[in-house]
Image (tube, rainbow, N blue to C red; front, side, top):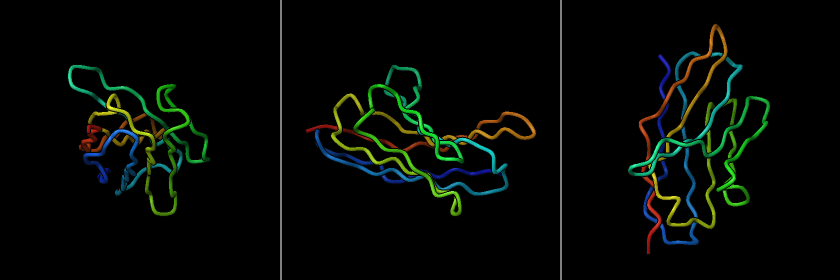
Length: 118
């Protein structure tokens, strides 16, 4: 059974930084993509950033230049370094693992709250 556990959320002032972590455990295909999504109150869940096993990254326009996604394939860890945080970054951040064999399947963490406020 695949399990994703996020950590690192919290309260930070505008302009500050946070680093989120996600630990994946269980058995899953080595061909996969991991990512971060977020959901603010009253809004739909949206993509923040993804990274493939090979290191290809993709970012939402709203976070480009401020957030950096990375992963440690050997340890099944995913990170999101968030700099220059803005109040509009406030949301619950979810870790996602998408595997491609034997079919496309998505796994989600329980989420971690990030609040940007003075």
